[in-house]
Amino acid sequence: MTIASRNAAIAARDLAVIWHPCTQMKDHERLPLIPIARGEGVWLYDFDGRHYLDGISSWWVNLFGHANPRINTAVREQLGRLEHVMLAGFTHEPAVALAEKLVRLLPAGLTRCFFADNGSAAVEVAVKMAFHYWQNAGRPAKRRFVTLSNSYHGETLGALAVGDVELYKKVYQPLLMDVITVPSPDCHLREPGEDWEAHSRRLFAHMERALADHADEVAAVIVEPLVQCAGSMRMYHPVYLSLLREACDRHGVLLIADEIAVGFGRTGTMFACEQAGIRPDIVCLSKGLTGGYLPLSVAVVTEALYQAFYDDYVKLTAFLHSHSYTGNPLACAAALGTLSIFETDDVIAKNRALAARMAEATAELADHRHVAEVRQTGMILAIEVVRDRGSGERYDWRERRGLRAYEYALSQGALLRPLGNVIYLMPPYVIEPGQVDWLAGVARGAVDAACA
Ligand SMILES: *Cc1c(COP(=O)(O)O)cnc(C)c1O
Image (cartoon, rainbow, N blue to C red; front, side, top):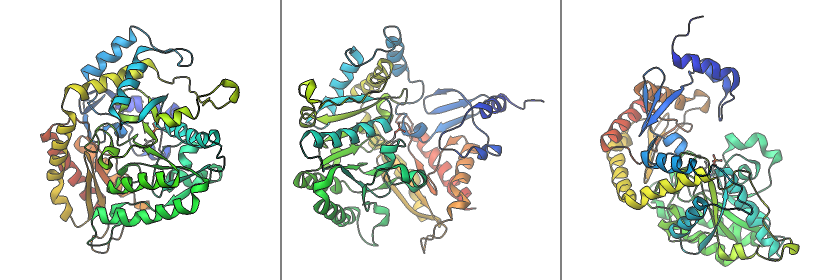
């Protein structure tokens, strides 16, 4: 047998032993896997001399490019000192320094950091903590969670239960706890002539009613601030978060903000919650936390929540959750390297300029006959592709139009991985303005390819 290319050789070995995430493996009978040899900046290089602009930041984790020299140095220096030590009974400088920085960066009042090792685990931590908080507070009936339709909080059973993306959830439903699901303020669904703010305000009535009806049995509300990313990049106005904070306080319910995808400058502010001027009771962070280098996550909580667990051991009020790699020093070093770039470079201002460039470069797509909407929050720009713009008729999901867009983008040297029929750009912050224009051109071609 002759091997056509190095890519093909590695792909063949891979397919003999690896079961890939979020993939129907049979697709790879036709669809080539792309082995990546190395990355640099916004580019990923395969083994056959082709390269791809990482237009979705490798599932939204990469902030400052691949093989970023500053983050590389931070990890390399840590590697020479300490690779790992358990975080129970022991501690280390990178975890301490990182926790200090996060407390300083987050809205005032979030004072305690509980580390875990991936986004779903941080959501599990938040859910268990919120439940346990009310147990410790002598309110054991408060054990349910309120969540928004179309939300996504991860794949483990607790995180899946508080999410609402049917494709990932439906088959596991019998295994999941029962939650209260409230209609999302998703502004794609606004009435003609209605603006984002009016729509988000109007939809809040559902949340208000759920809280009024169920406050006695609800531990917490969990939301993705401003953008429901895995739910096809659906967006809403910050006023919803302001109203939610006020209502949670009034009804005595905790508020969990899952900033795993939107945190660290993605929406135009360091954290999305800042745009509503609110302080959640628990914030979950992961993804961009390490600049896309290593798995790490953290749930940051208020002092009041922390104190509800703080007592003599024999009272058995402690939070006894743990993961082996909690607060791994190499991951913390990558996070510190990432945050140091925010400290020295004017990242948020640069991102705003890049976001404006993304808007300009895609502006003409708004008139495309197969585009129902181009929407944007900061450096997330999404293109809603439909069969018929006039009637809003959608393509049948079985047609897999998004897959055509994916393959077209690859043929042009860009990584775009649509969510259903939504093509989106979510590039690393080190993308250059000219590359934004080029990527927008690929997106335009991808829309055409999807609709051909
Ligand atoms: C990706 C994501 C998660 C899950 O994080 P993993 O590290 O993939 O487990 C949770 N919440 C949101 C909002 C996410 O985008």
